[in-house]
Image 1: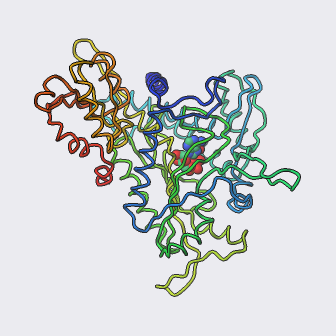
Image 2 (image 1 turned 45 degrees about the horizontal axis):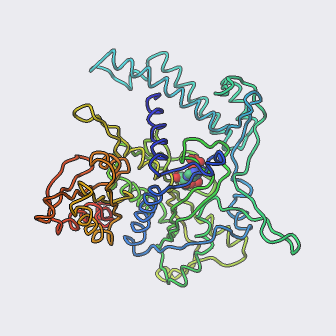
Image 3 (image 1 turned 90 degrees about the vertical axis):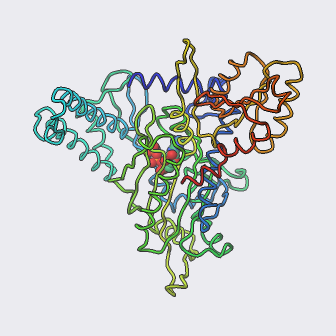
Length: 513
Ligand code: ATP
């Protein structure tokens, strides 16, 4: 684990050094849990968004997009339940003066018990070798039985307290389990309080009566309140979906793990409107399809898992997360939720407008049910970055850091390099750039030795380097170097476009889903 944390620190440093992610307002010592994307980060991020957008809207003829405003009528957040219930339970430690989410402290504590169980199992597996029967061991080993029972007891109390919004109950678990502050090491805890995660601001001047508005904590509500507009103007027939990419804001209590948990972040959400009664079928469809979208990137199938929710939000009748193996464990990247007709019904109630669909096949009107797919752009970015990062030792004692980014997502697709800065090679290289730049993000690189230039491109994940040498002037061929294998081959300039396109196009990636 310590080693993984080390790698994570290096990835964060790499992201900064190579223009992917900078801490926000850095010259003013930063702003907690807010980040800026640099020159390479913005390209990678835009490519992720394009991959999502095109997969959802091009590959599904019944999904269209919108771009709704961040500010919305404040009653929307009353209707959606966010004003009353978008809370996290907060607890302070009086000695360290640090603030924590009470639920996260308990979840971390449960994870520690799980680790202990896994350790016992790993030890036994080593001891018994081939003949080890894990199921039997779990049932019979005294220590493991005790740990499992303890885990179950804590987990049950925790679920009950969360379901009942029982803040004292949460505090009592922290006290009973003797959970200490990781910084001060003490158990000097305050009461647990509810903390609303929405940012508030004022709209309009006070003279003509200002109104409290919220920065949206999710993009989904912008879709629900436009359901009728899109359905009517687009003449959409159920089932159909509305997709949106945009910023969301949450005043997270504990901001940790770099861009995993931010206060300003971006979501890619799609709400799919279906006939009541068909929602489980569509839930299954989207659960599978979204995982295929992830796996098509080739980051490693074993890095994904589903986490089905036991505790459902009051409006949901099924929910699952797609988790990705980050250096700090399996973590949620995307949520797929069956939201019933909760949101549309609430908006119907609060707005007084009829929000229904007339189904010509059934000859009846109803409030559609909704399946939501909701993925964080920044978490997706982090999963791509972490799984692509590799420190490689090379023959001859050399080393390189390489980002094995999926080619379609790479910020720069190819770099063109004259071997030397004379003899007409730079001019020839420029000619190639001027041809390729219309289709691919292309860098021209002439500074430093060729080896150093390759390393710089490896570090930002450029799939192809093209080197122009003296032979190029004679026969119009160049060396094409592949990032991952570092193999080089001689190819005709005339073939470059086709070759690069076959590897880096989004089209090829979309076909893999
Ligand atoms: P968590 O339990 O980690 O707080 P959540 O279950 O509240 O997440 P959702 O409300 O389902 O998250 O939001 C959908 C997606 O938005 C998440 O899967 C995640 O990718 C992203 N997301 C949510 N909160 C943040 C955040 N603070 N920073 C970055 N991405 C976020």
